[in-house]
Length: 153
Image: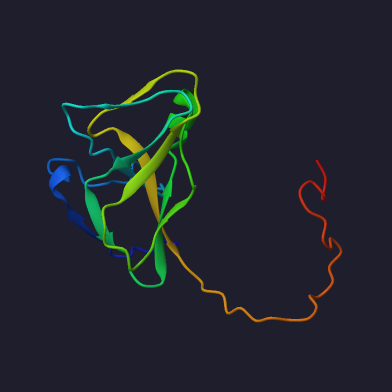
């Protein structure tokens, strides 16, 4: 079974000139790596507990019926405690502005973000829209209204 390939139009912005095209790092990778488009003369330092909106230097035209999810890179999370807030972030099909990545430092040390650093990954995912309807009662289930932790440890 082969993976479906969906076209994703990408436009470089002025601050993204010279960066590599986002790329999948392995044959089976679900997400492509996204680089930071910070000023090469002014790297960004995330202190512990700090967050920052990091530019990527590009905009995309996500096909209708899809979203571009912005997700953390597992290596950055494991080694440095760097993750993406609002995960996954969603780039909607009608958005045409710069893709930005909201990073947070959950680690104990400062983390320096330099130009070209791989800071997140993008996953193109299909979207289903709900057709909401008001009802008087919901169907019963064995779980019922049991919330957080109600199904076990």
